[in-house]
Structures are given as structure tokens and as C-alpha cells.
Image (cartoon, rainbow, N blue to C red; front, side, top):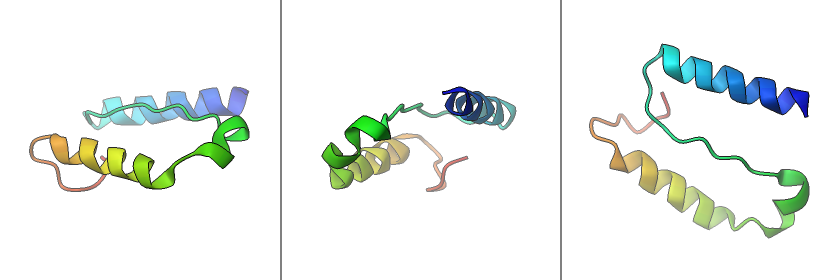
Amino acid sequence: MLDSVLIASDTVEFAIRRHCKGYVMKLDFSKAYDCVDWQFLEFKVEKETKRTPNNSGSFC
């Protein structure tokens, strides 16, 4: 549990330092891994990243 909190904190700190706008998504893989519609998830991430103006097509 502590590892995931540290990873989330480091990710948010990194985004703030680089002045990145973005989204945070929490997935509980231990419970949802077998039920994830990966195509839908990829579609949503792609759609959200294309929404931002002046997007270079990559995360930060």
C-alpha cells in the first residue's frame, strides 16, 4: 500500500515541476485485472491526450 502512495506522490510532484496538465487514474489491478476492457482504456487515454491544446502526443 505504501509503495503505491509514494509512486502517486512522486508522479504528481513530477507533473507539477514540469507544469504538465493531466489526469490521475487509480486502477486496482488486484481486483480488476480480469475485467479491464483494455481497448476502451487505451481509447479513453488517447482521446483525453488529444483533447489538450498544443499536445505533442506524449505524456509530459
